Image 1: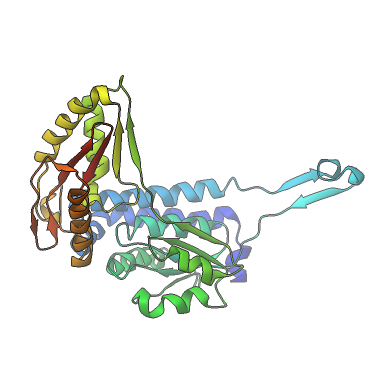
Image 2: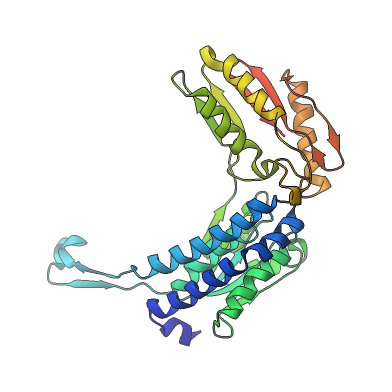
Length: 322
């Protein structure tokens, strides 16, 4: 899109600020749809839309500070003291942005806005579970008046169209968030640049001088937010033996206080995204039991809803499962 590329940063930033304004205006409407579509608590869903607007505004403002460089020749080659290198920032072209179900709006906006402010165009593939929320985000960009062809949306099951769009010769850059399929995308991308965010095994490390009440509160928030369906969720806690028993008890009390129910009721624990995910979590619970972990709270499953469970494996390795 030569016309989009030719715009100044400040002109492209104006479009992004308008998108952010639209998202703030419609945060409750989009949040309600998001909550029902992916079973996220209503307040958290609205917060996701607000945070997306903030990210888009941030990308727009940061884009205004993108600058080239002028390098004196002697700094990159001793024999080139009389030469000057001019470095310009150029868009790569078409950016394929693929977002996951757990943050279908937020983890789309964080891919799209930086690409657009730099002069790229977008092919946005929302998640299969979360595509309606993704389309509402796309509507905000359309309402903001982006020129035709700058923002393009593709919907469909990844298993059916994923390989096609990743391998498509028109795609210059791939930005993807999810687990499992990232390695495959890396192989399929070939020499094209990619940015992959594929989750982690996040640990909370608790030392002897920690404020255990505050620590327990943050571990609970980190582990059980959105029923644990976050790549940044706390997966395990490594705690000094001298404070382990006290911390375990504080966490156990807070786990028992978590509410379980529907997302529209802002329950702490809501149904997982699908039965396959619930089966996987139940497998983790069974595996922990088989390896000698002691369940400190009740294990119960109803459909694809699994009650929060606290495991204590050994005094220096405390496991949280949900």
